[in-house]
Amino acid sequence: MSTSDDSERRVAEALRARASGAGRPGVPRTARATPASPTGARKALLIALLGGVVLGVALALLSLLVPGLLPALG
Image 1: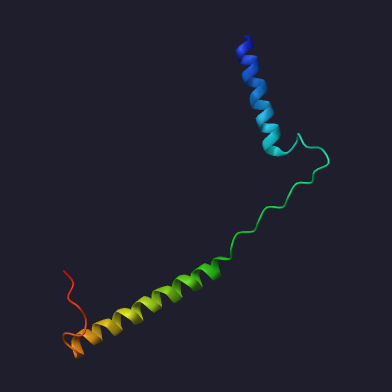
Image 2 (image 1 turned 180 degrees about the vertical axis):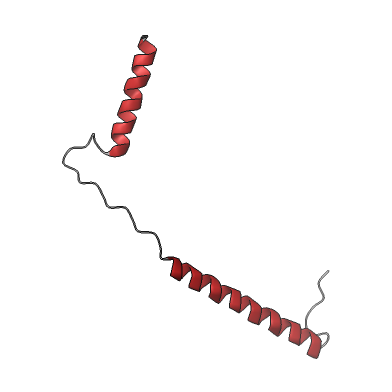
């Protein structure tokens, strides 16, 4: 085995040890953060979707019932 292979192996082992926290004795591992609940994200997306629908319907009704109230696009 050449010296470059040996040094690459040692660097790889050191990086693995650092990533796993093995090189820091006495320091407890931190618990992984729990991901946000999927129901909260679903609820937020549903509220945003319903808000967009209500806004779209309101603008459509305004443009039909009161012509010229909304500026023309384009």
